[in-house]
Image (cartoon, rainbow, N blue to C red; front, side):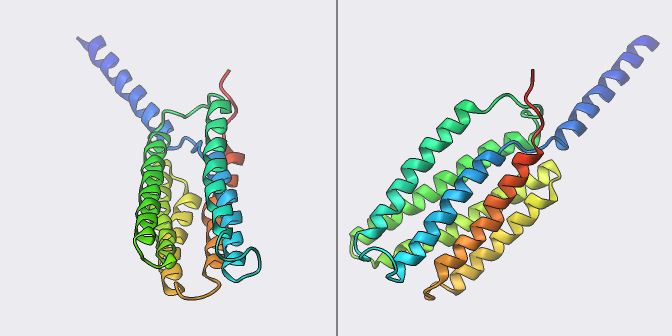
Length: 207
């Protein structure tokens, strides 16, 4: 009877240690954040130049920015997924949540883009697409704060707070000619840079 109690206690301690190690496991999505952060920073910067007549003809130039962005982004995502080695901590709560919450974020943004395209096709002004940016920053904020909180990563939580601030800032500047330059800077600091830091902090590949 005593041995059974000891065994049960040992099992509970083992499970507790596993849970604690899982909470502190590094997030493994850095390469994906780095990739999309880089592409978005470039795309928003190009959009700024196009919007202000610095490149293109303001009629077709945007079709040369965003469709290629989507194609290149998705292609790069699949390549990164296929080439990513097994990493320690992949089964932690933070990493499991990260995979789900970023998928939800992507679906939400795509839904907003499709809705904006339909509205524009039905006579709405092209500025309808401007509202994609604050929606995107809103879902980034949720994804970053949730994954950062579960993993105990304060930098990612801070990035999420920055993304939340960007929602209000971009909305306040919705009629300003430099709004997409501000969005590019916001992406660089809330997605690209945190992604780089996560990638540098990743554990070595599992043998």
